[in-house]
Amino acid sequence: AQKITQTQPGMFVQEKEAVTLDCTYDTSDQSYGLFWYKQPSSGEMIFLIYQGSYDEQNATEGRYSLNFQKARKSANLVISASQLGDSAMYFCAPDWGPNDMRFGAGTRLTVKP
Amino acid sequence: DTGVSQDPRHKITKRGQNVTFRCDPISEHNRLYWYRQTLGQGPEFLTYFQNEAQLEKSRLLSDRFSAERPKGSFSTLEIQRTEQGDSAMYLCASSSFKGYTFGSGTRLTVV
Image (cartoon, rainbow over all chains, first blue to last red; front, side, top):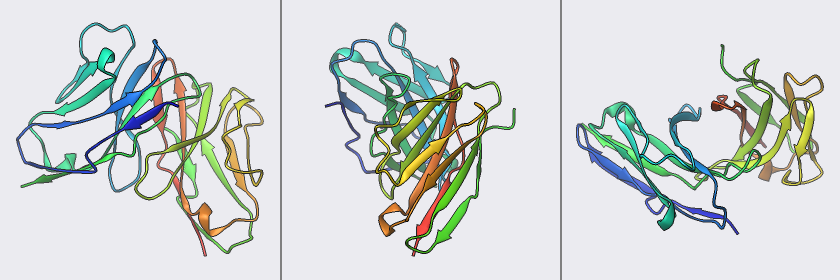
């Protein structure tokens, strides 16, 4: 069965420092992309970054970068220069098909001033 | 582009009552998804539509759950005979080839 593991239920980071959020998964699929979403306390899921199955270079979006290692089935999110507004839940979501985007249990990030 | 809208934002209902939630997707998005999220967990896929066709419904949690998208635009999710275990956030998302957009969700509390 396909499974997604986010091993860090909670993380703390000092403001302006970088933080890496881990995501590993288990799948036999060969072709899939991967999303990271942010969910603040308001509840809305906010798209952060996506990397497609055949993208050769790791995706970057502003302060977010994705370290996508398909051979290791891992896709870590790096947030550089953390801001207080980055405090939220973060979810890794492999996209295994049009009806099969699944989410990990999430990591709660707290940015300390 | 006004985003994905969900109504209501919050719903409190007594056990045994029926509830219906509405989702208005981004107008040009032809795919629409429903997820359920319980406390401390990631969203769990329930069902999805391509236009008005419901292409996946095997993961609806029980036969008390049903969803419609009659004209390929807005969608409704109905829960009949609610139980306390149905208390959760219900999220709707729509997608195009550019990616997924989520609504703010409907938080259901069954008392």
